[in-house]
Length: 451
Image (cartoon, rainbow, N blue to C red; front, side, top):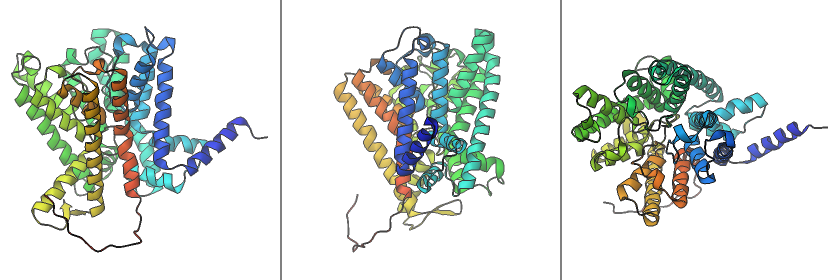
C-alpha cells in the first residue's frame, strides 16, 4: 500500500513534469505569498491583528524582496512576525527555482528537460552539473555573507538597543540587505544611523554583492582577473560601477543644499556619506538614511530611472537588469556607427540577445505605464508620488515618497501585481525567449520607414 506522502510526492512529480516551467515558478511564488499571508494573520505574529489586505501586501512585498510596507514592521509585528518576514525574504531573494533544485534533489524528484533548461536560463549555466555546483555555491556564499554582515552590524546595534534586540536587528538587516529587500525593523528606517561608518559600509556591501549576481561572484573568485572573466561579468561590473558613480554623484549635486535631505547635515563628510548610501541603495535594496519624501523632483526622477534598471541577472535584485541596459546602449552605439555587429571587450553579442533586450524593455515600459495610468485614474495622489511607487514596485526596490500608506485596497492590489510581475516576469519572459522555434515559412523582406 502506497503511503499518503508517497502518493502526494508522485502526484506532485507528475504535475511538475507536465507543467511549463514559467507556470511552476509563478505557482510557487503565489503559494509562498499565500502561506506567508496566512501566517501573518495568526495572533502571535502581530501586536494588533493585521487585516487580510495588510497581511497579503506584506507577504507579497517580502517574497518579491521589494520592501514596500503598509504597516510599521517595528511596532506592528512581534518577534515571530518579523521572523516569518525574514524567512519569506530569504526564500524570495534566493529564488524559488534555485531553492527548488535542492528540495527536489533531496526528495528524489527528477526534473524534466524543460525545467533543466529553465533553471539554466535563470542562472546562466550551460550544463546541469555546473548548475548544481552553482546552486550549492550560492547557499554557501549567502550564509557566509549574512553571518559576517550580522556580526559586524552587532557592533552598531547592540550598544544602542541591547544585547538580544541588537542581535536580532543585526540578523534581520543582514538578511534584508543581502536579499535586496529593504525591510527594516526600525520605524524610521536607518535614518538614525545615517552617518554610522559600519552601517554605511556593511549594508551597501551586502546589497551590492547580492545584487551583482552569483555568476559574477563565481567568475571573480574562480577565474583570472579581467581576462578570465566572461563578457557578462565585465558588462555587469562596468555597468554597476558607472551607475554607482552616477547615482552618488547626482544625489550629492542635486540634494547638497536641500534642508530636508543632505542639507540637514552640517559637515561635508556627513552629506557625502548620505549621498553615498542613497546613491547605491536606490537601484536594488530600498533602505533609506534620509527622508525620501523630501527629495527634489529631479532627484526623484533620477531614482525612478535607477529603480527601473535594478541589479544583475541571477541575483536578488529586480528591475530590467544592468546587462539589459548595457546591451541596449551598445546596440544604439552600433546603429549610429553603422555597424552590423554589436561587440564589447573583444566579444560579439548576438541578434537574439538584442531582440531579448528589446522585448524586456518594451514589456517593462508597457507594464509601468499601464500601472501608473490605472493608479492615477483611481487615486487623488500627486503624479510623481504614484509614479515613484510604481517604479519602486516594478524594480522590487522598496523606496517610497510616503505614498504607500495612502493606497486604497484597489491600489494595493495594483502594486502587488506590479511587484509580482517585476520579480517573476523577467524570468518567465527569458524562458520563452530562450526557446527557439525554427520558422517553417520565410517571407520576402519588406521596407518600413522608422524615426
